[in-house]
Amino acid sequence: MLFVSGEKVERFAKAMAAGADLVCIDLEDAVHPGRKAEARSQVFGWLKDTARPPHGPDVAVRINGLRTLDGLRDVLAFVESGLQIDWLLLPKTESAGDIQALESWCGAQVGAFTALVETPVGIENVAGIGRAGGKLGALMLGGADLSAELDAQFNWEGLLSARGRLVNAAKAARLQAWDVPNVDLSSDEGLAAETRKALALGFGCKTAIHPQQIQTIHAAFTPTPAEIEWATVLLQAVPDGQGSGAFLFQGKMVDAPLLKKARRIAELARAV
View 1 (cartoon, rainbow, N blue to C red):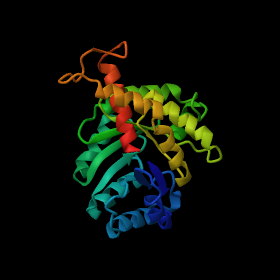
View 2: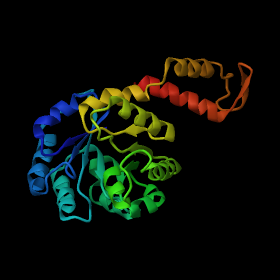
View 3: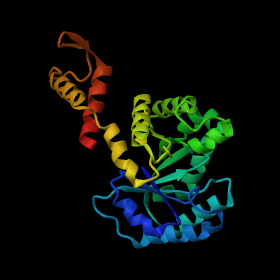
């Protein structure tokens, strides 16, 4: 997912064409506090007036938190616009009730909600947030705010505990898990390494703050030729009528977890 600032309307079309799977227009942190109203108006106006390309990325909007006046104004403006969007991101989510309230107001206009968890209270309650139900589709880690409140480093080690708790909560609730962006635009290798770590931990999405990061993220998510060959041959070897039972393959016993891994590799290869 690629973020684009809600006050940079000239960048919206470029973001949509940058190759991301999902583009999120941001009304929260990427907008100056004094320009929230202007950004809100131009974001919803642009979305209403601009035709979506048939094979373009999904579209998301990140509103301001529900505990702020700007967040309430965002919700009201969105409802009054009548817009339909794929995802709505709620920052500073701290309870299942936050998501449930938002869905009660505008759920009919949204394909799915993402709970952005970025406070110590949110991390403590992340399992409960994951059980909010309804159209909640993903949990996302908010690293900058969380690291500041924890007095932790905004890096892999500093946020490792929070990452693990969020992934576990997401998987327990059968939701997607999205990782925080890497804000260092000077190191493609650093981004690639962090993306591979996020994938290894169980995240299914690495978010981005600049189009130049998209290719690196997609490459990190791409299975290696050896992994693709292993998954392909293994799935072809599954005995007829046997979807998950154990069987012998190349001298080794294969069971349901290995088949699940092979299917995930094949799914990623097709997606990329």
